[in-house]
Structure formats: C-alpha cells, structure tokens
Image (cartoon, rainbow, N blue to C red):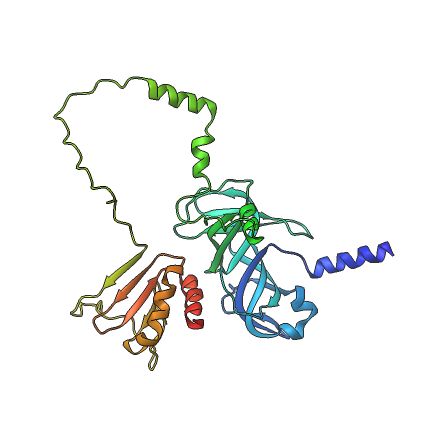
Length: 326
C-alpha cells in the first residue's frame, strides 16, 4: 500500500511540479502542441500540468501559464505549458518567487525551490532603469516581462512582506524598482558596523580645519510658512506646436484606417485617441492614469488628438485593457 502511494506521489509530482516561476504568454494549444509568436527560436516546448491531464479543457487560443527555464544570460530555452487562464490576465507577465543568489549590473540569478522536485536556477536580466541594490541570500518576489527572448525583472518585493500582505496581515510593501530600494533605507543608518559608527562620531566631534576667509555668504531668503517646494507631477504633459513642424511633430502617429483609438509606435509606444473618441473614452483614460505603473507622458495635439506615451509596451497593454473594461 505504501509503495503504491509513493509511486502515485512520484507520478503526480512529475506531472504537476509545483513551480514558483510563471510566465504568462498568449498562444494556442492544439493536438500538435503549443505555439506562440513570442517564443524565441530554438525554445523547447512541452505540455505539463493540467494541460497534459485535462487537454480538452485547455485547448484553443488564450493566455497560458508557462514554467520557464533560462540559460546563463537570461534567454528563454525551455517552457512547460501548464494551463489556459479562464479570465483575462491582470498584472505582471512574469512572476518568480525565489532566493537571490547573485546580482550585478545586468542580471539576477534566482534559486527557485518548488514544493516538489529539484530546485533550479533562473536568470533574469535587469529591465532598463532597474538598478536598485538587492541583498543576496534574501527571498524576493520578482515581477517582469519577456522581451526579445529574455526574461527581465522590472520590480521586486521582499517575499515575506508580500506574503503577509497577500494574507491580509499588512499592506502591500512598496515595490523595489528604479535606482533605490526603500526597504534598505532604515537599515543603512541603524545597521552600520560599530567601528564605522564610532569613526563617524569622532569625525563629527573633531573641529573643522580653518579654511581661507572669503566674503560672507548672503543669508538665505526665508520662505513663508506653509510654502514648500512645488510637488513634482510624475506625469509629464507635452503640447505639440500649433504649426506642424518638420517630421510631423505636430501630429500623433497615424492609426489604421477607420480606427479612432488604439496602440501604435515602435518605442516609445502611444495610446492615441482621435477627437471623435475623446467624449467617450478620455474620461476613463484620465481616471485610470494615476494607476499607470510606469513613467509616461500625456500629449495634446493641435488637431484635438491626445495620446498617452510610455516606454514599456507590456505595461501599456495591460493598462489599456483596464481602460477598455472600464
């Protein structure tokens, strides 16, 4: 009886390895296998999980969850197709839970430990602008995307804090992205080595050497109470010149014939609204703009068109789906 149970466990584990690294990708699953135009050439594709045990429920076109493998440069080399999502995808395209083994200026090496099966390493490239310091041997949840056949990390969370937030124990921690890690700021002042702290204290108490005397500096103008520095708006608003400049600067990128709203561009990427679509769609766009997670601009054109310009195509696509759903 015990032998049969162990054998069943082994077979189930082989069919349903509990991965903690998931790639969400559009494609089609048929009798010949899984195909997607976004998979790089030479990438091996296998069917596993529910897509293998319940094929009739997961065939057809849609968004699928894939379990990825990479080489040492972060290029996608192998995927296992697990299942087709029943509801439209929201959120990041790539999700990885794991322990950070190595981080440098261009990649992260993450150790992923499934609940069953052997642990494996996944290499994630740093997305453009993500230069924040992450501590090795710490567990993180990475979120990112697949671009040009490589898996890129765009943001990260301390995994323990993220799990507590998911269970309702505390609010979601601030994501680590850009060139700073907000979860290390409090530690840098308090967690310095005793020798460093003592050295800083002695240096502070030491009198400053006399410097050359110069003209006295004028006193700073006192600001009225309540008046601080103007707050920077994360959204840049750009207005095209009234007269069309060379190169079509005064016009948005053209949409396909008969279309009044849509995504265009090859980098940066534009969500263009023609004047005919403003009355119906611009209030929804304006309402959801604060929830756009990436750097972007709002552009106004003399012909009445408007555009939301971003440099992250995947984030723009996900956000645009939310606008269409209202």
